[in-house]
Length: 583
Image (cartoon, rainbow, N blue to C red; front, side, top):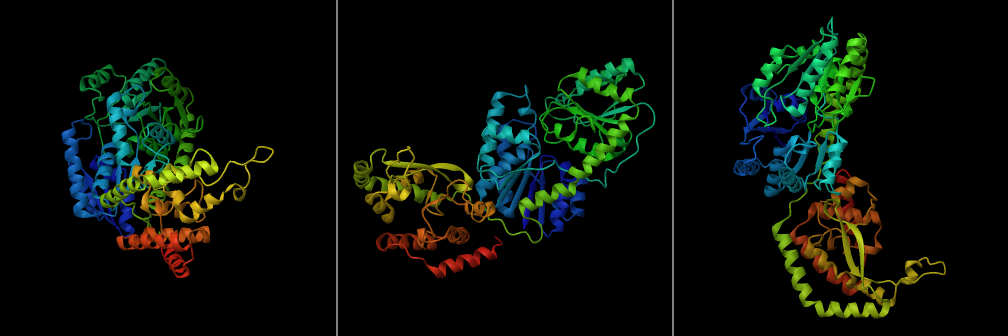
């Protein structure tokens, strides 16, 4: 397969995703990595792994819509030229614009990796307007995503609350980016007084101000303790200014070490790792690297950070924006010289058990079906404009022409069964999205002496049987087709929880809109077992074409006129195709 990976920073392609991309190549896939910056060192490292690089325009922290349109245009052009099977994007702008581009180009699977919601979604931070716009862009971009990977449950909950994630989305929580234990082996603690290290971009939201203030408090009691800050400046408006950094250094409370691409020796030289962030993290990679090195952790009780600390075992969680609580946690290590070693050992074990990059990548590759021997995953088709236009045209024209007949049927239903004349029921639509299906009512509300509804056979009327046998009870579904809940032709919409072939088979079936009629309905329908219907539906999903749809329409007329009959040859062919696809 051809895979395009879209990032907002070239360095992250190796530092955060290098192992994942390498495993993709090792599995025989053609991988193209994209980022906005030309980083010669990273491009060379990608080439050594057999990965090609494409530069795309992108202003990571900017809000200029013209610049963002240039990003979208570039991604659309890239996807049309390369025709990838899979697009994987991570961080905000790559997810939004790669997701939109895949919807425009179509015929590829899209996976979004939400490595953190970021500054805009941080509590008390960001503009309401920007948050609203970004939420809506997210919602459209990932509407047809094959899966959305999240690093913590809080992000998934927030995205659902904002309407970004819908009930049909396949959401998979993974333990961050993982950590390469060979690059970050366990190291002995340095001798002497505790050394507290913060590694982060120099953003205020990372808690730099709180770190400095806590350092002042600790040094009043333990002046021998050292406090180090390591990390790059950032174009983000939340970045700490150079003047403030210089004042901190001149005060002698903290030492700023600059930036580096090799944090391992700095982690080895520290006793305790500190990240007092209130930025909306995913699951900070720096914490995982510190844990693998065998360092105790002090971080905030916030999304993405709380997952890394088992309270009192490998570190401490403190409230965000609270330098006093942070200082108190630091003082624990100054007062108890052996605490850093005890907690550091537990950190290393926790990293090995949960956050090893091999375990994380196995989840990601398995979800994307990129491991050797994985069955293929159907491409979720984009909304075909011609098919949708036909659905709209037919539902409007048929609705107008049949309106007198529909009104007459409604009158007969009302006279024979009472009101309401319509029956509404929640069904599963494309991608598992729930909708309310409407049909003509075919049963009364007759009840026994205790007030319980009688069995269906006792409640269905003669006219109701006629409606079902003739399929006329489904005429109101023209409204569902017009709304876009359904199509004229496709697998019939399922009741929630119906899964005779397992959830994977149902997900494969749900890549298409459900239909008013379908392949199972013209080859036996109610005479078939649930398993037979599923096999026929899956065959149709794999073989849908204009010729097949015309055949279904013609056979539907035959079923209405002559009744249902099981077509055994088609059922056997469907099962044969179903087994070949690995279900």
